[in-house]
Image: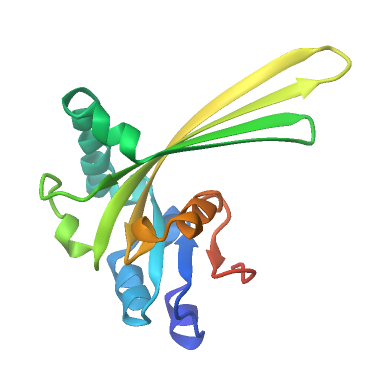
Length: 165
């Protein structure tokens, strides 16, 4: 992805990528292009994942108002299933160790995803939940509706509008 980003013109886009591309070098390349990013954080960045997880666990009891300020939800129904996504956005603080290594990082996003499957014949429900974390760099946090639209793309990495990798 890093080589591809250096070859494409992605100025003024929001780059979203899965955990495989959650690397400081990727963030550096994206910001050098004048572009914003949203990168999924999982155990491939073990220390970062632990720091972000701990940050949210700290904020839940200490500052619940901060969690409500950056809250967004999305529910859609299609193909016999209901997808629910709940997003909580927090601004970066110096509380997280090592966060300064990420180029122009502005916020972290907690994503809770719940998917319910309905079988028509048996009328049974099957529900699963997933908790993900994202990093955002550049102007993602402040871009209003564009940011909310890109939140829905967290599971579908893209290079700007209509350019998928």
